[in-house]
Image (cartoon, rainbow, N blue to C red; front, top):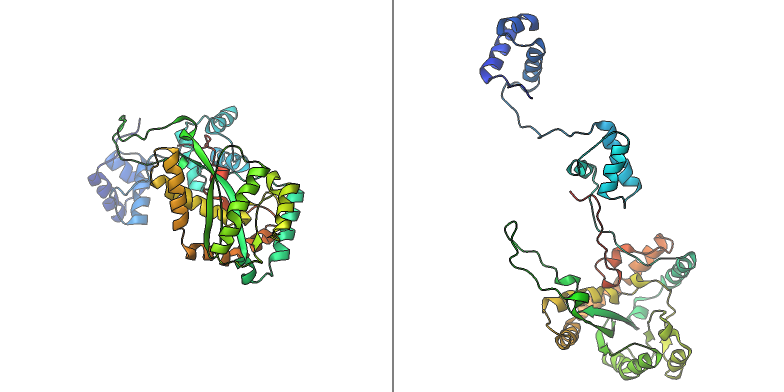
Length: 353
């Protein structure tokens, strides 16, 4: 039990006697308080020039300096260690700490966060990415303006973007959001864009194969290029999906005299359409579609609303992506993957306080 602290009057008396020339021992005997208490009161008065209670930081941390450093070291060396594992490792060395006590990691700048996912890159992938970046770094802005970027993506009816924060009292279930298993359904779309704006968007019915992909290109590629005024010598970008690189698909490009941009595998960060996908999904879910028909309608409406200035800005800053790849020696630029549905962030227990 903590002893009752002395009153302000007693502390003032201690200081008064000290000023009068009394020593710690005589003050202790005169006021019948421990000598150590007299010393603490005098030292505090010398440092702060007051005997009043000063603001306190709260309850002191239970772990000493050594266990605290070990907790920080374990969390830094093994970022995916869970809270329970930290507790067990501390108990094994004789330092039993509560779950909330491990919040001392916050003071060292370590917080529980959701890990980002990114495609696994082999050495061959890094070499190809580095080769692509170095070979195209010197390309003129006009060259990138002639590129028609394309990709496919899945958009869920009730996706992660439907998460909402609400104000409510504890232990209540007000203001809930209805959920549906497996996202309530989804659609797959193909779209393209250039610095001049967005091109056609097409909903993909059923499973995508090479024949269906060529049908999409036949009905939408040239029309989009014409709409965006890219001219006949534009460059088409696509990833290395098998249906994109199929022999019959490449022959189709050759027969149509369409130049295809050589693309490094595992490089979503180099495709600026990924940024538009994120913005599209956010805008669509704000519309709160109630069925797949509305979802498709809102997707096409929001895609057409994408501003030309936004598209132009993405292409204007494209050399920065190449510079980042070169600086990372072919590694992935995780900054450009933030918020993308392709690489959803898995939730795991990590230092939850």
